[in-house]
Length: 459
Image 1 (cartoon, one colour):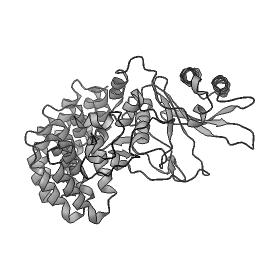
Image 2 (cartoon, rainbow, N blue to C red):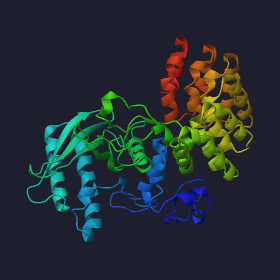
Image 3 (spheres, rainbow, N blue to C red):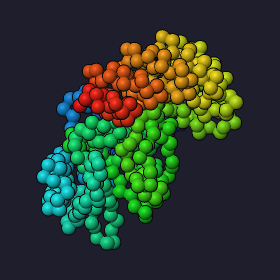
Image 4 (tube, rainbow, N blue to C red):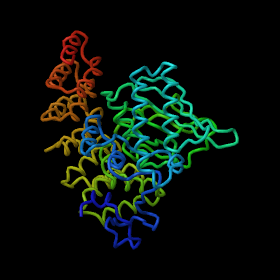
């Protein structure tokens, strides 16, 4: 059975590890390690799909949505405290109706004007009615919708359950995006909803990032945990690098206490990790192993799974967590493999190598090269001698797909000035919106007297 089907099939794990269908030598399994459909997380359909990987762009997310017949665009779940208030026998219909009414109300708010006080008050009244119809609010209980502030891609609102003073109340944040499609690789309805689901599924609920409850991709909004200075500290810290992403917007303006409140600005820095659950699992396993035991574990996994390219690629990525004196030996051990996936993973890990070794493997991996390996190698072009970069640039530009073109565009400044506009024009031919966006950002790398001509090619 393929690794992918093993990881995502809905079986209950056998605690006798050698009999488990997804058994990998050296993993520690327990009876608690099982897929369970809980009250809070839905492992079905679009929710599961957007949680298991970080997609590279909006188009790939839209294509994933279109795989599902009659999708309502909802990923995630209502807050557990809302679901608990709905009688079990009525939950299916009432939750479905609540999603639909929330979508209509917030879509109307965007159309009518999401900054106007009277429109926010109207939306607040309609949300109250919907929550009462669902049985989540009763009697004189009500919520208040309050605008927190606008951003470049969306406006945040506080949804406050205004109960009696002696009762517990909860607060939520609604982020209403200005547009359904943002045409941006780091921000907007599709990208941020995907990143939030991916983080929730792979990092967990109680981390240093405000938890997503649900997102409506069709109507363009997210409902998340409200964070203030009084909230208890997160129970664990998760590391974005172990998930193959980097949170570019994790700064003081997006942080309250020990929590980050933004899912925008999360870029993919390692597509193997964002696409492969085995890779994430092994990297976490080695990262959390005491440093003096990591090499033994790495070698054991290598020995027991020497014919499994997924696991070998995972081990290639994990080399960076080994003691420095062991890293190059393990790199060499994997470098003779013919697998393009293993080569790609090693290319991402080349940053740990000294310059002479990096140049050796850079040349080796450039032979009969595939586009994914090109992308990984391009990240190290700065360490290649200046007089050799042009030859590699030319090689990588041949039969390049969009991911390679974008990677090369981001490194245009490493070329001699006289060569830059030629590649700009090459990549501008029949370029789609994503390539044009990166070309636009690279205009400053083009000699001043050629910028106007190049700019005209992408507008």
